[in-house]
Image 1: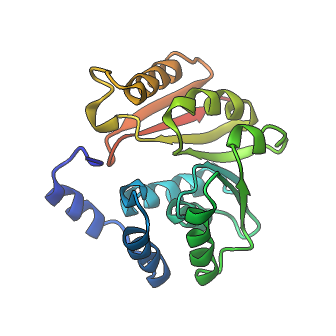
Image 2 (image 1 turned 135 degrees about the horizontal axis):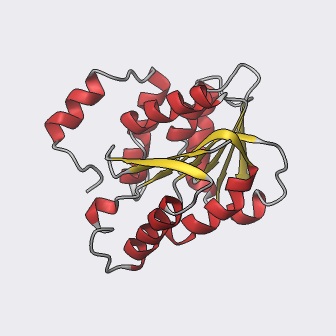
Amino acid sequence: MLTLVPDAIEDYARTHSVTDPPARVWLREATYARMRLPQMLSGPLVGQTLKTLTALSGGRLAVEVGTFTGYASSWIAEGLTASGRLITCDVDSECTALGQEAWNKMGQSEQIELRLGPALETLKDLDEPIDFIFIDADKANYGNYYDLLLPKLRPGGVMVADNVLWSGGVLNPKEPSDHALAAFNEKVAGDDRVEQVILSVRDGLNVIRKKG
């Protein structure tokens, strides 16, 4: 389960909030047709949220950890300024190839830089101030991504972590991912460098703003 609200309410919110261009509809359909775990796709409600927060954060430099098929990437890119850039990281060349095809269709390739390899390595030397960060990757490393990227986030910048409610698994953690996400939420809640709110959009978004 990747949503915590009834399907009818989810559908209502989606139809009254977002419109996907044909190329992103194609990407969504291709993801479900070709990928082994298509439910990993963020979905339009999360996508519109990411676009809005990217734009509100300034939209000059955004970083995404966990590209999958590039659906969320395309939304984030829409929130960038005309000269803004998105750096997106993943280890799967097959999934990201589908994203690159979609970015080409949407005219976004010039603004999106794909870095293949573990994000803890590909981002460690990034020394530009980041406006917006989206984390949607291996749950065990959420805390490590946070520790690496928060110092690089400019004061007033925004970080979003996906799946932080984990279909309710954080309430009574049993599996390793349950424990990792519960620990991440506790870590962020106790960090006086930030202010944050957990939203029950789909599987939970932790929206984090760096103070300053």
